[in-house]
Image (cartoon, rainbow, N blue to C red; front, top):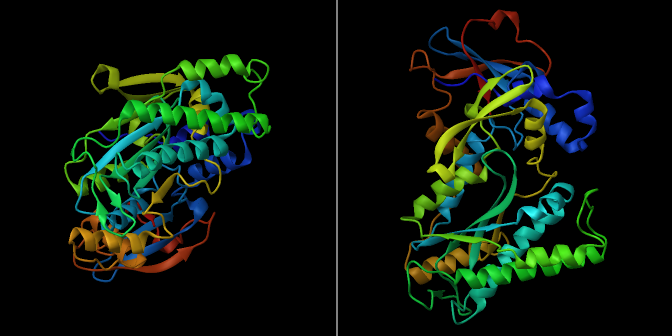
Length: 399
């Protein structure tokens, strides 16, 4: 049975003044937006069918990227745009993770540390792609940041989808030198390059006093001991086999690109002081198990994953970068013998996304199945719908 509990219920119950004062303003705004999503606080509109007497009250969404209720349309539109960019080749999936010893620095310096994570991951991919031994061409990557584990603890890592080839200097498509469909670059070598580059840049940040350090940080006078721990530790660059088909790439990526830290479906119980939610235990074969935490501890964990304002969690590098993507994809398709595609407009993507989500036109009447829903009235934020339109019909959401 579908759960009726929501993340907003947890925020309303455990988000008090002492907790509010301990978190940055941008996190306060996010929590506030999530409690108002799809309520009269954001206003809405009333639609009525032009064939029957069916009416529908739709409250507006908060459209916050951390909201578990607001990502459906954006996710589908993003997937459609990525489908337009697919090439008839294999794609590899790589994951760059950070040791848990750096979690403190990530909590205090999320923008700086996550930017460095992106930069380091792309440095590794670019270094091996430029090497004639492995590819000798300009590669690309679509990169998505994730900061959470199944239990909402801090676990920063970047998912990278990398094409099995690249554009040579003459504009021709260059396949891997090794000619192995299941091999991209040597993993152990990538681990070492990744660790060395990340720690080199991090050392510069420390010397330049660019990092805000935790109160109990091992960094500072004990920096050299801390550095030795990280150098001795194994840094993980995880690789998976190539995707079975190009469209599986988009299907997989769309699950990560617009995902919030936790969905409402995973929340199973809220008591006076605790929250219970389901998590997937990968060590036990991926089975779902319940876990219970203190209510404010839950909020603390969730707040770890609220990203700074205007921070881009999805990035495209190499020949997929926005500055050169159109020209590069045209060259790649010509070289691969694929027909050129005409990109959809933003409105066309939106209409197609709505059809995929709802199965029919979003304006189709759900009651008589024949009429079209027409907007009859709009009500402002913090106002109740006009009495004339109040009815027992289901309340819906406005996109």
